[in-house]
Amino acid sequence: MGFYDLSKVERKELVERIDSEILDGFKTGNEQIILPYFSDEDTYIRKAGYQAVGKIHKTKTLDISKIVSMLDFLLKSNHEKVRQTVVNAAGELGKTDFDTVVHFFDTGLFDAHHSVRNAVIGSIKKMGEKNPEPVLKWAKKYLQHPDKEVRREICHGIELRGRTHPQDILPLLRTLQHDSTARVKNTLIHVLGQIAYKKGCLQTVVAELNTWENKELVEKALDEIVDVHDRYKNFAVLSQNEVIAYIDQNYNGSQ
Image (cartoon, rainbow, N blue to C red):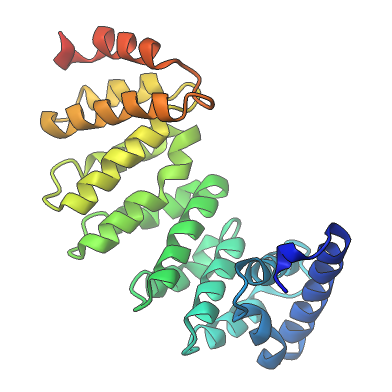
């Protein structure tokens, strides 16, 4: 039975049990207590498992070095779901202590399994929102990595910070404007669109795009921004027509 097949009361009881058993596993160094939750087929069970690790750290129930030691051991697992959950757990710690867990993302970024690499992206998103300075500094060095998938994943990972603080990530995105790989360029265009429909962000994005040299990519990004305001019209601050008018008035290439 899956997590959401349970009633609300049953889910609450299950989370409390997972919290207790994960704590016991980390306290005693017994990975056999932890592994069933970290490897569960149900993504919500695994989520409860890595969030339990975050709670241990937040409440300072255990020293972070002991938590990291166990996560280091679990990262060696042959089971991709375990490695995925470890990276997500490290992301919980990295919201406040990024330098202590950075090696999990250096490793996970090159994992053979896409789910582990996706966990790195998800962790960058949640850490970048809470602890942006060290996370963005780390991300910056990978934006020119020879592996196109690494560049794409980092571009995607820093998106969430851009939705509230576009000025923090636009200089990093700028370094990808001449990337020769279609998947990277498409992700860059997607991220610019996702940033621009959030409150107060369109103006910052358009002002930044006015300074970019790759006008072909900029035009595609502006088209995406216009389209996003239609696709997400129930969530966007401005209407599509308002966005078109703003771009016409403020994008240099429109003049």
